[in-house]
Amino acid sequence: MKKFLVKASALLFAGFMMASCCTISYPVAATSNPVGSKCGETSSYVYLGVFGSKGKKTGIQQSAEKAGITSISHVDSYVKNILFGIVQKRTVKVYGE
Image 1: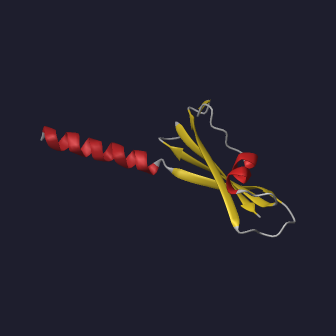
Image 2: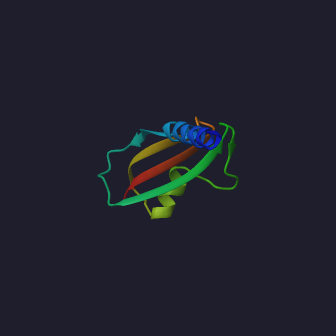
């Protein structure tokens, strides 16, 4: 019986952790430039809403440079909450030519 309770509580805990994952996406900027074929993406993690990935720069400029984009058409941003928001993965995607 004790083994069953341990396994059931572990399964329940894992279910709660998986249920706390959600991704929010929103447009950041758009220009009158036509939609290009290139896409640049950078990501970083933020812990407890304060502490981030040290030395890793994520932003529009870094994403554009990564893909060789000189003319930006639009920018999207994504925030994925993990462990009830204790950990966040922030991603910036830049589209253009």
